[in-house]
Length: 313
Ligand code: SIN
Image (cartoon, rainbow, N blue to C red):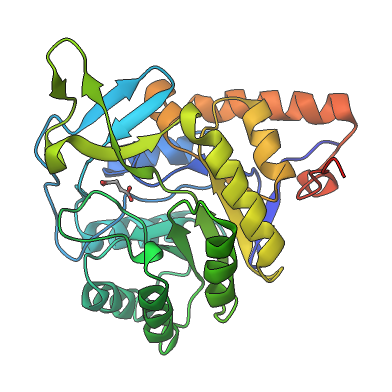
């Protein structure tokens, strides 16, 4: 009997597919649509303590093989998302979902985590250390010492399951360095990768940049970033303690992409760009395509092939 179920930090999910934070998850209506879909879980739009309008428009553009954005964390504020996830847990006991946080300072993150720690919420927190789009605020995940200090301050008091969302890394030394830090903390998972930050898209006709914020610099998502995403999933899965699950994000448009992420070590898959283009029906499509591939290859569960990518030596 074929199953797409997965487990992260002892929590069970019927299917290993969900949205990526930022895409179609800002309003309760978006989140309701995810609950109704074939996704195995949802993650809320990364929250700041108070609602934020985000960056000025145009702040998103399509590319031939992906997406390009500098949204700047538009969101409805922590209280909105915390109310939603707590109400959802009351309606659907036993279902774990993900509450994403992206404070623009350590103090903001700690204040939000204190509120969540003191609340009835039982689900996962995905602490976003990798938003490239807030002017004047570099990505914490690229500052190894700041990442360590953040996690020390968080785990000094935070008692509930928590993971981090990371930016892409591009060097073996950086995979070693970040994994060395993450392994010192009781993380439930890491989510890798956020968009490839600070690319530049040029409009050939108008000879301008394509989006307004940050002089046109923005994060790249979608098909173009799949090799970078697979490398980060693989490199972290090879280096992290087995208790820390890897959630793969980046370039998942088909069951085959999902299969490749799992082969590299992902226990859960998040879909961003293509979910934005296709809507909630994508989860049933990709579940079907992934299931068909598994049947063809003789696998009945993702554990049969997770992390089992072979090398050519
Ligand atoms: C944004 O709101 O700018 C995107 C969030 C992210 O990349 O973490």
